[in-house]
Image 1 (cartoon, rainbow, N blue to C red):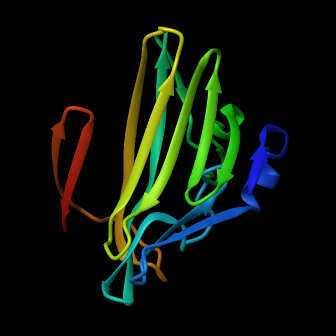
Image 2: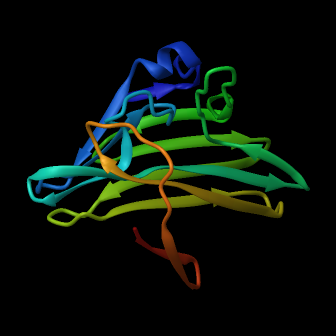
Amino acid sequence: MKITKEKLNLEEGLNKEWLLTNGIGGFSSSTVIGANTRKYHGLLIAPLTPPARRFLILSKLDESIEIRNKKYDLYTNICKSYISKGYEYQEEFRRDYVPIFKYKIGKVEITKMVCMEYGHNTVGVYYKIKNDGTKAKLTLAPVVNFRDFHQANTDHYFDIRQTVNKNKVKLIIDR
């Protein structure tokens, strides 16, 4: 499946979805513009006792890129009275083996791929930035939750530890 910019408007982008599974009951899913519109959408829905008791752990990553001191939000979120417009920078969505999102701002191209490790409750998100020497800074804001994937809730508190090794970040989240 390949969807180009002409079809990546808000209305059509919200009506097309993707899904990845890990083979033990876990999955990753969302719309092709990255807006979670269902309580079952998320980057990491993991079974605590495979294949059952699935929990939404990582809802999504809100990405922003700063180019020449100007920030551009690449994410799309829908709230009661506001819609962020990251989909306007999206050039393409492709689903070969994994979902691939392509964004473009001026001459800077950002590619994002989402994958799951088979047999494990692990999701990987890979970013590739192609530019013409323009300084760019990518910022990722993980939207974390820990809830039964059939429920919706609020007011969670987490203990989050982060380790950085060169260009890799590992988050450990305790509830």
